[in-house]
Amino acid sequence: MPDETISVIDNRTGRRYEIPIRDGAIGAADLQKITTDGPAAGLMSYDPAFLNTAACRSAITFIDGDKGILRYRGYPIEQLAENATFLEVAWLLRHGELPDQKQYDQFVHDITYHTYVHENFRKFLEGFRYDAHPMAMLNSSIAGLASFYPSARNIFDENERNISIIRLLAKTPTIAAFSYRHVKGLPFVYPDNRLSYVENFLSMIARMSESKYEANPTFARALEILFILHADHEQNASTNAVRSVGSSHVDPFSAVSAGVAALFGPLHGGANEQVLRMITEIGNVKNVPKFIEGVKSGEGGRLMGFGHRVYKSYDPRAKIVKRLADDVFKVVGVDKDLEIALELERIALSDDYFTSRKLYPNVDFYTGLIYRSMAFPTDFFTVLFAIARMAGWLAQWEEMLLDKEQKIARPRQLYIGPAERPYRSKLKNSVS
Ligand code: CMC
Image: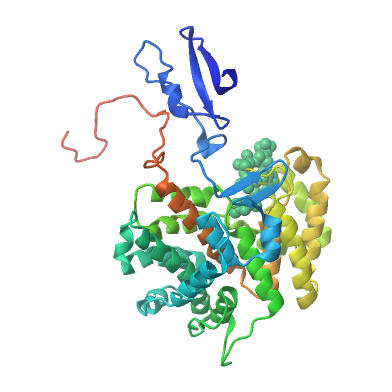
């Protein structure tokens, strides 16, 4: 069939090759058969930062970046955000279908049952400085969990995978909240298993002497929605890190800690923190035009919370977050920085620099304002992202593991260093 192959003529040799097209892609390995008669190996594709390379087949998340569409397992993100719970979504991401009542109840029970962490974790967390960044603490703590569950290394045993996934989903909010309390110098609050996933997290963050914590329902629902919006986003930098590290067949705790590390970066999950810092630095609506000029000239850094590798229109999550911000600000009163954010957005959306590059607000643009209005400290924002993304990392990790086409992720390179040369020491007392 003509539309299932592409014909390539190598102008170096005049040879013609038929390369199969499958699901709209050619296999990079098929290029290897394009060779010259010289010593050079077969043709490679060069794609730093994976601009146009699919690294896997995945049935989990669908994004259409031009149309601004995001679906988990076929369900539109807008419908899930409106109607689902985070744990329902976590189940959906992993299993491909929504849970029925029995499956859901069992799942919620299992997660609730595993929220406690080993007491040694107290000492572990107490070892961090008072001003440690919570993402640094989360990263090393998640990796540290591997030392508590050595049998998790049996990754091809379904029961082991299952319990590791439950443990990670259950314990990440506990570790995150303990890190928060450590920085604040407050006693750790143990999980309250009478509460829902999100309420329990808020309780571990905010509870003081009250016998039972009651979360503000608007905050609890807002956080649940934000967790749903952040739960997965196909092959982003942190998911790619999880898949890549997981492809070595290491245990899942080690694999997802690589995801936490990647998420920490300001170009990825760390952007929500940077948006708030940027807004604070701008300080006043009247300074917005000058700031935008600085971004355009390249002297003022990037407009954080804008732009996306895949979305070339408004990020559908950002639309939902903007509406959510209105709900939260009705409870806490309008945030003066919201005015700056709205002005930044207004100017950027009408400025040729941003429109010609298809730079629109992404999910991180408004989330920071919501988190801050709930009194979360700025450096904790990315931790909230990580709690949610854990669901996606785990679903993607398991999909990678069970995918017969996957092997250890090992990219090729184009070597551009020196050719062979003899060793001549530059040290004073060299023996040569
Ligand atoms: N502000 C100003 N200019 C920008 C921005 C921005 N936020 N983003 C991209 N550009 C410009 C960039 O300078 C380049 O211009 P030119 O063609 O003149 O050199 C052009 O747009 C293309 O940029 P790129 O760096 O090639 O695009 P990318 O796909 O590699 O980067 C991105 C995507 C998200 C890293 C980038 O847009 C960015 O740095 N945004 C700010 C950080 C941010 O908000 N990150 C959160 C992403 S969404 C949530 C998540 O993944 O965690």
